[in-house]
Length: 329
Image (cartoon, rainbow, N blue to C red):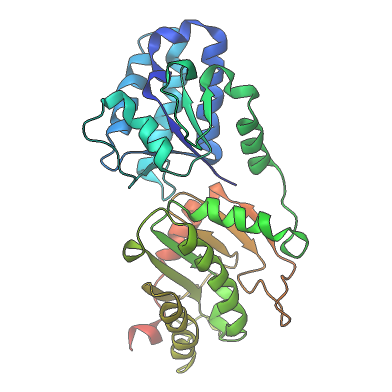
């Protein structure tokens, strides 16, 4: 689904781009980050600033212009969408260390798929579990094959998926997120709440068990819509809102010990049927919803796929008006 990388800023050194093989591999890497990758940086985002400065220098040469444009697109996506590309690390790094060693310290301390450098032979060897990868061989690497597979392959439905694959998808999509948002219009019916609770709880459990950030900084939000067949503004029955809030949201909050906010939206045009999970950097389509377990505790037939194009739609979802009955409470 997503790959998480740490990169050494020197991969964007302009002088290296005269080599066409090197240049091609950097471009492949940057295109992958745009699609379904992230870059882990320090908490104060100094690495991001270094990379930006080097990328601007690439524009001074014809050979580096395409890489500069790609990096600019990554920056725009990071700044202007809800899916971040640069993820701040809270791993400890040595203040006394040389600035050039900071990416390696982050790679050693934080869970990631690869530490990508200009030349791994120039890196201090440690017992790090992080995988050292030369950028000049990135295009043919196992990591790039994995990334393409995540981006291009249709996953099996949940009922036919190995549990380990489901867990890997969710963990990769949530590990570096401080907030999760669940969008499911069917919750608004007020029925099958135990099934919705079981599915959402599974995702929250995986998130909390593997999240990079401390639990006090985490929160979740649940969005649903009115279902009474009416065109008037305000269609929630008097009891539905309170039942869902108590039996689903408050119950999940008490079980997992994190704040969970509940939003009941009025969707006059019925545009918000598709169900999504959104983290700080990833959107997953859950088609048929978060009631992913049947009455026997087995997974139901549900399609899950990476949905990078969903950002604008989910922004519209959040901006729908609250149902009037909810506003009056």
